[in-house]
Structure formats: structure tokens, C-alpha cells
Amino acid sequence: MDLDTIREVLIARERADLKGLGAGTAVLAGGTWLYSEPQDHLEKLIDITRLGWPPLTIDDAGLEIAATCTLDELATGEYPARWGAVRLFEQACGALVASHKIRRTATVGGNVCLALPAGAVAAALTALGGFGLVWGPRGDQWIPLSHFVTGVGETVLMPGEMLRAIRIPESNLRSRTAFRKLALAPLGRSGVVVMGRRDADDASVITLSAGTTRPVVLEFYSLPTIGELSAKVAELNSALWYDDPHGAPDWRREMSGRLAAEVLAELGRRP
Image 1 (cartoon, rainbow, N blue to C red):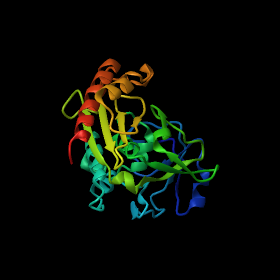
Image 2: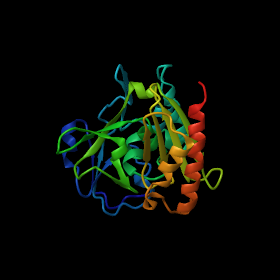
Image 3: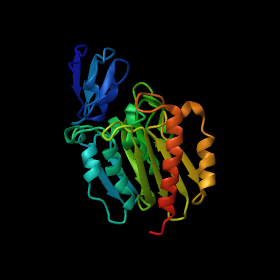
Image 4: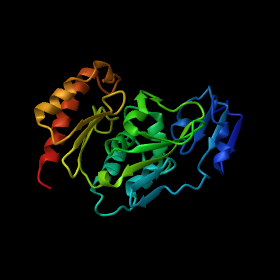
């Protein structure tokens, strides 16, 4: 798709080059969504791919993922053997309707900031208790990803702000995980995606996505019973269930509950 309203493309080489972010300007990284449809409100792009951020940084505190890290780099990265939870990365990338070419180009930051219900990578990072580092006029801020996406295509980002990186704590990466996906067609967009995490102290997190307008995180101090989990799902506001050609809200509510039960059962099995 030609973006014929664009009048300037700035290649950012240092943080000072990002000061032009604001109305009529967009960040360009992978660009796979940006160039997929008209963007008549845009006049300027700031290319951040030359800022030289390492895609993955592993340290004692955990994992830092640059916003410019591609989906393929995330899915195929070399991680410590003790980090069993990183299998969610490949599973989440596999839930996307994306070719190998797209996976080598599309970025983690783009998947998070687009805030689409089917953004499974954003949901996986949320399920693992990730935090997003936001750069902007208000200064650097670490924001829990569970609070980052506020609705379909909506995030907490204010004008002039951008996502720099995502950090996942080391302890969460050692957690046990489970993953389930359902779509109306074998190769169709995800209608429901449910991910579970069980930490070393048995604290558990069930994350619902694709069927909801934003990732919904259900937290428990210990592994819940099926009744406790079902009650949490039933209590969710009806406005959270997404409605589009890939699934009706009532179907998504029902299937999310079923897949959540399967995830809970897997987390409850002996390792």
C-alpha cells in the first residue's frame, strides 16, 4: 500500500531524533501493518530501526525485548534451559495469521502497540507478567502490560510517547505454562486464545485474549479449582467479549471458559 500522504521520513539514530513524535507522525519499525492499509492521517514517519537496540538482552533480572525485535527473533531466540516459559513465544507467533516473511519483519513493539484482540504476542508477554518501558515527554515509565492495552486499538500511550522495550522477570520465565487456541477455520484468525502460568509458589495466572477486547488477566494466589476459575470468567463484564466475523461474543465467552479449564488441567498435572 502506497502511503501517499507521507511528506517526510526521518531515520532516527539517537533518542533526540524522536522528539518529533506527535499528531500526524507514526513510528516505523517492521511496517507490516502500517503499509497494509491507507493511513490518511499521517504526514511523517520516524524510522527507529537504526537505533541499534539488541533484540534480546538476557541478564540476572530476566529478559529484555527491544520494541524492534522481530517476531522471528523472539520465537527462535536462544534462552537459558531453565526458562521453560519461553515456549509461549513460538506458540503465540504460531497463533498469528502471518507468513514467514511477515514474522521476519513484523516487530514485538508493533504487535503490542497495535492492541488488536488477535495480537497473541502481546498477550503472551502479558501472560508472563511483562512490563513495557515507555519513552516520552513525561519521562521514562515502566508500565505493566496488563494495564497497557485498554481496548481494541487503544493503549495508554499519550502523544509523543513510544514503547522502547518489554522486560519479563526471571522468576516468571521459570514458570510452567499452558496454551490453547481456537479459530473458526484451520488457518483462520484466532477467535479465542488462553494462556496459563503457574509460578514456583503455586501462584497462578490465566490470560484470556483474542476473544476479548484486551488481554484479561485472572490472578490466583494458588492453583484455583475449576469452580473458582469458572466463577472468575463468568464475572467478566459482557462488554469485554469481542464481536467480529471471527466469533460472536457468546461463543467466545463459552469457548474461553472451556479452554481455560483445559489450561488449568494442564497446569495441575505433575511436571
